[in-house]
Length: 409
Image (cartoon, rainbow, N blue to C red):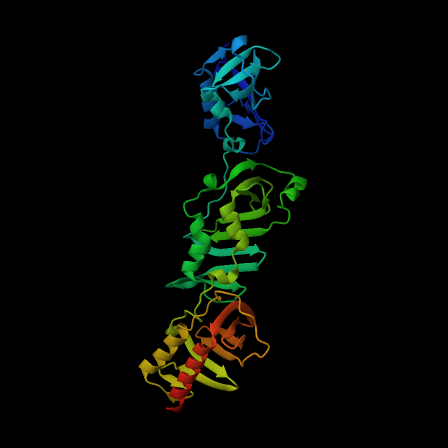
């Protein structure tokens, strides 16, 4: 048998039975192909032209009755070709033993043929590959603002007006004006997206999915929403629904009806990241030139470190040597804290708290409190918000004693 001449084909329908998908095109007067059911979506013209060009290149060989194998005769694919003078429907079955061809019948006829596997490979391509998908790209080095909402609440960070080493971004919520750790942001969130364009991030694109279907996919109430505004104003967004299979989650752009599949490594990342995963582990990373004063308090007593407009350093109104003042400041920056490696049960007899109040040159403030959690740890609070992090109590005691000694000197 002979397949139609490509130039005579006016309409093409491809059906995949294994995943119940189909797509249908017709040739417009200008020669461009258009998807019949989603005429507003762009189609990759090259894909269709490649499929039609293959019609005149592949071989079709009839199979003798004695050569017909005992296989499942449920079709895997159907290719329908319509022209002015001919309409042809090809039902395509399993491959032959050598895998270089597939068994095929013309709909309504009994004769069995072998259809070249090269054409079947094109027919078997994911339906989504025919759409020219115009999803925005995430540019990890050009982020102005980032929003993430998941089971751990809402995270919002923004790029600083004057980015600093290791800290290009600051929190808007939940830790207002608190520094984002650049390396942790990259390692735990952004790096996984590096080099992954929309084409290799998404699979099985489904346009204009109705609300009822999106509800079954978990996209009317997503498990996570991720949005980025780039420095040029462009937006990248993803809503993550329920698992579609072992390797993918249903996903869409936030507020959109088109659905696709997101690889599970990216989905799990968005579902499971906590705000403090990307938070700086230091009390602050502000340079000394941007700090007017630090108040260190414990048991009702307060020591005040201060930098005057003239650049003179004071501790409790007493002038300090420049090197002593900078050493105190630097040691406060090094007052790191972390999550305990194993669960730490809170004690009923909580220790007295320490508090550090920062006063910045831009008139903003930040309060970091350390509330006794066990005999060995204090829990960290940022601007009245309890964090999951602890600091060893002895570190606070050492810092307090040092401030006491300098104050009494």
